[in-house]
Every structure is written in structure tokens, then in C-alpha cells.
Length: 386
Ligand SMILES: *Cc1c(COP(=O)(O)O)cnc(C)c1O
Image (cartoon, rainbow, N blue to C red; front, side, top):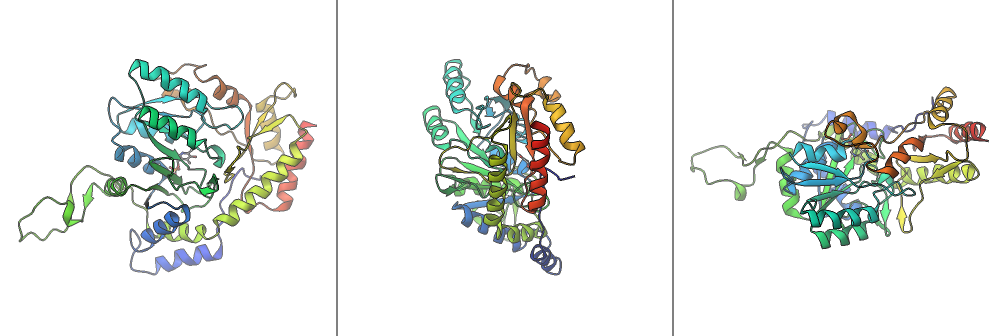
């Protein structure tokens, strides 16, 4: 089976991890800040906070932006559930903005329309989470303009998009957002096993996220309550936090992988360009790449044009899998998950997302994919659809 995605671990990655295993620190030693600084420098952000998953990063990002009961967070339905769950962790409520049929990203027109209605109803969101679906950056300039007009904060869920560029600048620089989140799950662009990171240019937000990452504890004397001089404790818990820390073992792997990031993304582009060319005459609609956006191609998602084929999405996928191509669906609209249905979301709520759900498939793309694997996928897809 050729999987839809797969990590690539090299000998230098292994050596970097082994060095940590032989060192004095296994967790939160020197490797974590080194990895944070390397990612911040790559992206052009001031601050980076490494955590044990992107899910944790989304959670502490919401907390740092003061999301709580009575607040709303809006995101795209075509995403992994974590983009929405983070609001529920904070006791806030979630709502969804439909996607655009060509970019598979949150539709800024739908967002603008929904904001105008929400303003009248007095139910504006506190946070909007644009998701860079498959690694393709959203239209951040327009989303940022709307945030100025309506006063919401922006967390970019860039779990798919480290190594992507928007207007020739790296995703993660937070030029048009308050916080950007990356995932280092093995199926994403670069990996730490499990892991994530939250980037920001605001030192107060990064301070708060660092505290939430580690039990709400500070060891900065300036931030502690006054203590008797004879006390020997050198830290204080000043708020409620979690253990969301990344280990040095993970950070060393991530830093080593980061060295190859541009190469990895270039490789993914080469695969995507070949697919684009070879599938152009088939009833498949690839994700339309917007002007000025350079995707990281975490996923190569296509929509099956049901008017031009007698195959259903399910049949197409089953034949692909039977022939050894690990095609997958990303994603079921979040509000169609049973847990969200039980909150009252109904079928038909975001029609474009639901249409996407009936048509979409992700085809294999990963940096260690060989030319022959790439050709095999092309031949099998063409064999099924022509
Ligand atoms: C993978 C993913 C996450 C969660 O990442 P973890 O590191 O596994 O917690 C969140 N959002 C999106 C869009 C993702 O694809």
C-alpha cells in the first residue's frame, strides 16, 4: 500500500535524537529552546512556544487570548476536529463558516456575511481560526481586515502549513494573526513524533502560553507574589496550567528535520505538479492554488467531478485501495461528527463543505515518495477514470 502520507526519518535525525538520549536532559533542556528559536527564525516570528501537540497549542492559544464561557470561536468545517475542540476546552462555543469550493479553505465571503449578521445579533466571535487546508494559505489579508472591522482575534491553524508561503513570506510570521499553530505529528510536513508549536509576535501572549504549558508556574521573580526572604522555593504557580511540554528528544528530532524543510516542500511540489499535469483531463478537480500562495502540500486533495463520472467517491476510493493506493478523506465536516450533531448542528448547515465531503479524496504525497510510486499512483488513477 502506498500511504497518503508518511514521515521521513534520516540517519542525521536519528543521530540528533541519540545525542539527547546520552545527554543530561530528556525534557525541557537546551534542545527545546533551540528548536523554538530555529522555527521562529525560519518563520520570522518573535516568539515560539513548543508543546506536545498542535491540539495543546490551540488550547493554550485560546486561553492566552482569554477565550471563555459566553465567547464564540469560528472555524472551517473542513478541518481536523482539534481546530474546533479547543474552544470547547475553554468553555466557549463553536460555530462554522463554510469553505470555498475551489480553495477548500474558509470562504472569506461567507465569513464577511456571517459577521455582518452576528454583529446585528450581538454574537460576534472572539476568535476566528482559519485553517490552511492541505498547506494552502488562506486569504489572510482579507481575514485580517475583517478582524479590524469586527474586533476578533485570529489563530492560524497552520498544522498543515509549515514551509508554506503567503505573499512570499513564511506562514508563521503572524503578520496577519495573533498566533499561528503548527503540528509535528508524523503525517505532517516535519515531525517530532507528537508535537506542536505556537508562534506569536506578542511577548505577553508567549509568556502566558509558556505558563499554561507548564502548570501555570513561573520562575520569573518579577512575576511572583512577594515571599518571605527565608523561603527557598524558586517558582510559584500563579494560574491554572497543564503539562503540555515537549521533550528534548522530540525537539532534537524536530530541529534536525527543520534543516530539510525547504527540500521536503520542494519535493512535495514536484509530486503535485506531476499529478496536476497527468490528471488535467480526468474528472478530478485539484485544489486551486491562489495567487501569491505557496502551499506546503501536506495533502494532495482532489474533488471527484460526479457529473463527469459514473463512479461514486466510495467506489473510486475502494478501487484505489484495492489496487494499493492509500487514498483517504480529509475531512468529514466537523459539525457532522456525532458529538457535534448532538450539540444541534444539522445537515445542510454548510452546503459547500458537505458537497466537498461527498467528492474529496487525498492521494499519496510525501517527501520520501519514489518516482516509481508516483508513476504507479498516476497509472492507477488514470486506469480507473479513463
Ligand atoms: C493534525 C491537525 C491538528 C492537530 O495536530 P496534533 O499535533 O495531532 O494535535 C489540528 N489541526 C489540523 C488542521 C490538523 O491537521
